[in-house]
Length: 478
Image (cartoon, rainbow, N blue to C red; front, side, top):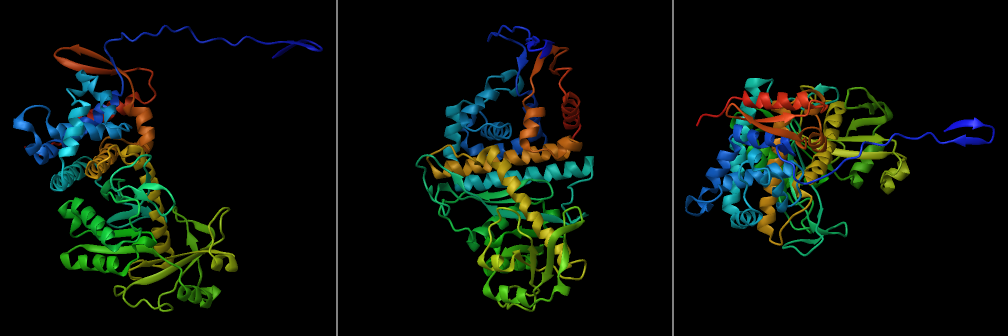
């Protein structure tokens, strides 16, 4: 507004955007050009070839679309943000960039043909591609990054296990009422904290137990099978879980893995029982130590101590320790009657990391608290395929989950092998907005197909650099 005189004013005109005339007859322009990066990365790590070998028997008379290419295209589509099999049209209708892509009906038939035995072969194929990706990371950079806690790097690998609820809005095989009053599935998953890779996942009915030891054992065994052999043996592997993973049978299994040459340790939440409450009340204030934040600084209003020796741990593996953190509750925190009486919120966990070598209560507590990042992994995973299951048939949805985990891996490998800086730490939605969904002009010349990113796109250099790095990755033999 600009005032002309007392009591009067005029409105200053706002310049309008230039008028645009829209039509659907464009040629030589493609959308989602950055997603070609994911498809090429699947080829470079050997994932596409491994899927083709695993699914070869499903190819009718050796004709038609390669089943390995179909599953790779589905994984690329999910990594790109697709939500249903029909979203394959995003790739299919841009054949010059993504090559011939199977029809929706063909993709459906392939998923329906994958039984439990073939699904196991897909998992083996993912493990083979992971080994190649890790070797490429070692040859072109610093290798697999370390997870961090309390301002320092954690040794070895860190695996986080958690389950989540996925709502179904229609009747699907094995969908059931959940403990939260909803309806759907209750998959259990394992992520690698070092890289964000989705190591393993099992689709379960909605009424599956949260603390079922057999499910935890199966998921950790699947996750360990995904690790390259050089890392599975000889590397310290920490397995973190919430209180659902505190069953004695599961922890005993983790200890028994050491007999098979795996250097496994655990850090799992546990319930605040009456014995634990009694022990907390007996600890003098001088034995409570300030808790740490993830950057290593002191955490205001929080203290930790060790309860080992004050609570009976019979039946747990030898060397199991019990830790507790007490903290002023944040607004909206769910408090037990004990917490309300004490005026503090208490979190308790079990670990078998010894004190020797830096296993102090402060360090172990901040290390365990890092397990909370698995919630972010699950949130992003639901946005990368397993937040919605497409079929009425349980086996098809189990395959869909596996392809969703593959999509998460492709995004993780992209960050490790091809990106730097903030983009290497970005979540999938950011990668899609800045890199994968970018439009480009398609040109031909000198027998080459060229994608020309707009000279004004803010992240054009990051995307072109990623393609150049992809071209220079060492390829697996054969």
